[in-house]
Length: 346
Image: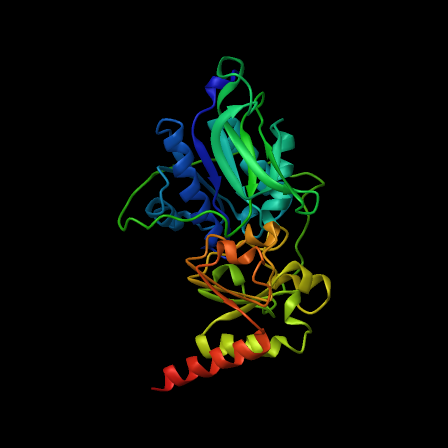
């Protein structure tokens, strides 16, 4: 099959318990951008599960031109083998040029399994996707055009790698949640809905699920927070995070942190912002005692308003901050908290 036979930008629309994950809408938003850069090609969502046909309209509202539905009892709960057979079957039948999967627990298992079966490459945990030429610095007449350029952190977040897959299709990537922006939904929008049967073949890789135990999350999802109060090594101690928690409580926000805080064991990794943590886009981001290393900034620079508090006036965080306060956080944060409380009470 020639590369030019592969058309369109497809996304895996992850759902759990018949509810679409936010990553599906984020991927659709990016898919629309990529499709426009490729000349307005089709954007399709691949929806796998059992009793999930009604979710197609929601995907249409967020930008899907077509929804390919594989509705089968074997897909009721995620299992690697039937899901891999279903998605690989869709790819082999419909031949997308680009296939995007969320870098979730499910996506990180499903993506590489499927890419191996359809004999293509996969770039994992991407933070940026663009259409361009490859090699990047080649003369235009010596480069391949309209390639998917997949950017991801490498070597523990100490460098950035841009990867292409010029000789195989589809071009596949898993994309970190919270990085891409979903579009405003168009109420009432409709998509072409195609029901597809990939032809399941049960084998010894079909695991049997004996029981599903649902656990209540012990930490909030910082990628969904509207206000984040984030602390770094400069906070000084785990006990000192009480100052940040008080500020977050006063303003209706959530506490997050830098990698240094996680490495020191002060906070769990679920609260880490940055290339090796989570990418966030809150309305307001407080960076308190955070120097502003590039790995951290990459995870929060798209915040609407960034407020930095640091005693070092040369700290790189001030270069990306909208508002900066130079001084001792132990004095500034309590004053700020008291002022917010007083404003709320008035």
